[in-house]
Image (cartoon, rainbow, N blue to C red; front, side, top):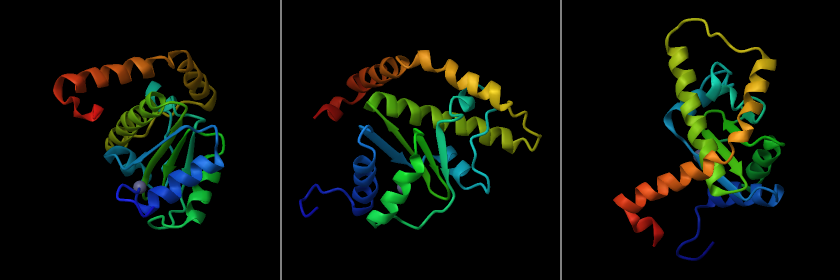
Length: 173
Ligand SMILES: [Zn+2]
């Protein structure tokens, strides 16, 4: 932590602690993208299953509604790790979103589609009309129907890298 390229303390506390507490997790991505963060700021930030993409997160998303301020203590990291349970996504109330995965491609895919799903839900909320929320059984089936598409994450990630290779290959340095 004293080196010139040390991570910032809150990243060390949260990511480091989650890695220690959840050894099967190889990748943790955390950010504050606009639609996910807007959803996280609602009184009830549940990702309601209203279409295929939002239903994809049914049963794999945990919600933390007890934001403890900017995390700078290992205790906050342990609290967050315990909230994950066997979920892959943690929507952090008044904060943002954290996803886990076995590979960078799979974690990125979850994060990418979570933000897209949050956009759909926030736009639906913005209509002011009552939402047509799927019954739990249909949402669960839809989430499971996504599982055979797991390989898409790698194709999507390779495509994004090939785009960067053409426009700005400096990320490979
Ligand atoms: Zn954050």
